[in-house]
Length: 94
Image 1: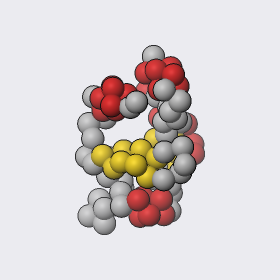
Image 2: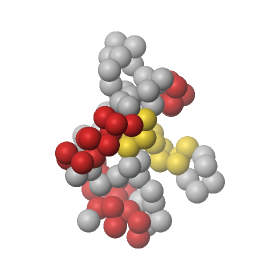
Image 3: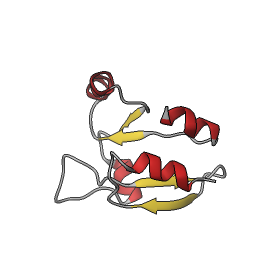
């Protein structure tokens, strides 16, 4: 349901992890994840966005990056709660 609400606001949502495509596919299937998961196995995207934590090599920081239609970074929301954040993000979008 949230995915449809984000689409109504002309918004695309993606998750990203350090996992392989096969691991991400298994996660999506097991948890019925509503959004595509991208793979950052070399951690280059996490490093570019400041989500890489050298003290925690297995997981990126749980941040949200809001990128506008023009491709520019509009917001960085750090240390979000995965269970409650989608709804609060949806409510904050115009």
